[in-house]
Length: 178
Length: 178
Image (cartoon, rainbow over all chains, first blue to last red; front, top):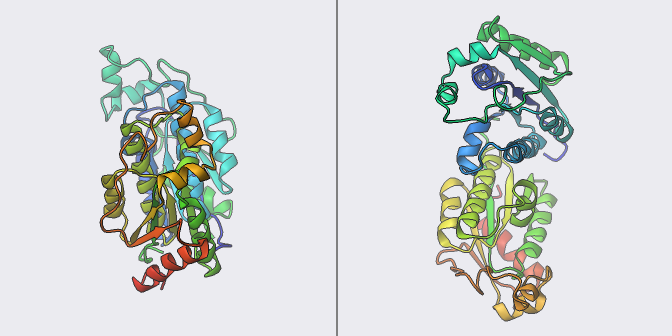
């Protein structure tokens, strides 16, 4: 097992409610259908499990994305593919993950914040509108779009299937699903 | 890869400087020699990488051992064997790991605290003697020995090789290294 090919890390970044998790789930299903090992790291779930009191300061975001990258690298070493969904608002958070993981794809999910606010499945933007939270990336804190993402998904213009197609196609083109 | 047999999680618990890491490293080498995939989680290293500011309160220890157990389980799902070294001072920290990991061995490392204080490779007990730290398990905080550990190692009476022999023998007896 030592010289196993590393797994692919697919890192979805984008605003809250931009559609990251929905597309990531579909990509996960397709990898499973290819009989590949795949683990799904949702930043919110990892927070809930590992550090419920971490918060959303820049230091906390930095720590959480570092943790995700570190865990993704560890799993990928053993040939497991990893799908990560994380707002990961600053470019350096994603660049650090890219440096750690030998097979890495950044998927930039783009969706106008107005559309995200309408979707708002977790009620996050509603809480912001009531003044209960003031640390949302793209609203109160900066969100830096990627300049060199392997895949860009405009989720308000694509179906989930179309979006997943683009991710899978790029992974194949790059030789990561051999 | 989906129906792979889970990896074995070998959890070393014991006082600081009791010899956990030294024996764990030897066990790791032996697993490698069998051409098995193995990852070594040292609680201190994981802290340094993932949460340098976590501290050593009971809540922090709880969080760190939970994280270790969670990561060990995740890797073991994919057939990777995991060697964990953590003071993990309370029984419930180790019991939680045992519940999470289908193939689990607890290795209770026992060494009189006076011997640990003499070894003191990290200078921890020296700092305690100078009054700089006051949160050491077995000295200032409780340390609960296991009641049902698969292996008990009295490291002041065993060589590293003898200790590793006992761990490997038990793993084989339990059918975990098939």
